[in-house]
Length: 373
Image (tube, rainbow, N blue to C red; front, side):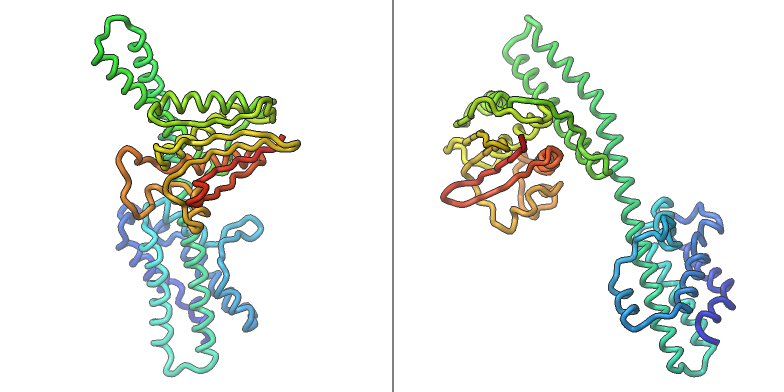
């Protein structure tokens, strides 16, 4: 009896072994028999069908190397559906993979015990079976990971949205307290600090909202309209000067830099780039801001001197959470999520523009934003 026929003949015993093993996994305490077996019967049928399918040597090699996460005609494979279901029930990826290991062991133990020797056809069946199980593992793990990521993104989106309203209320209260005449110097300082801290928290929440929108495929909403970017740049410089009076800034801004942009989003870009220049720059050297236009574009440069960015790091500058993932100490005053440049890049891309970065000991570090007119 060839392996496909053996699996069909011993289907109940194989599925019982799968169910028994799944019951031992953490998170399976409240699952009934159908949930424990999940898509195991369908996966066995797909494995049997794969074993019976004619396959050339080249096709087998390609299958072993390929990533299998594409649905066929919009319908998930049993392994893909299994990965999503195990993520929903709280299994870890290791626990899910161990189910396939148990399935493989169960099938091979029962089959080899039924045969005195293995011939060439049996060896071929073994290789095909292992390749098919590996394909199922790959599909399940990819879909499991995707499901977990979607859940995390949804959680962040809901959390960020729900946090914003109470923070706005606190900001309104601090703004009101700042207008009261009966305050001493200490109270004035404390209210000012509270207001700045709440504003910073709102900025972080907004960054998280933008990040989750981008991750969930919604993209960043922009509403372009004719805007004089020279005015936006001037206002952004004034704001950063007020926030960092110990720093020097050298703006060189051409007038009448009109372009179709979302003004609020571009203020966000400018604030992120200027804040980044302060956080990573040398306060003894002024931050340079240059804005000029060509016939078809508006260009904004923000330059500072500080630690030179190696060429190998430039490609990852716009990755999210790089600050948290970096294996280096971070000063508490500069500890943030590292989403600013990620969101800046997304906003500029949404305007069909691009950001370029250069860094050298002679010229410092320059972030150049180029936007179409």
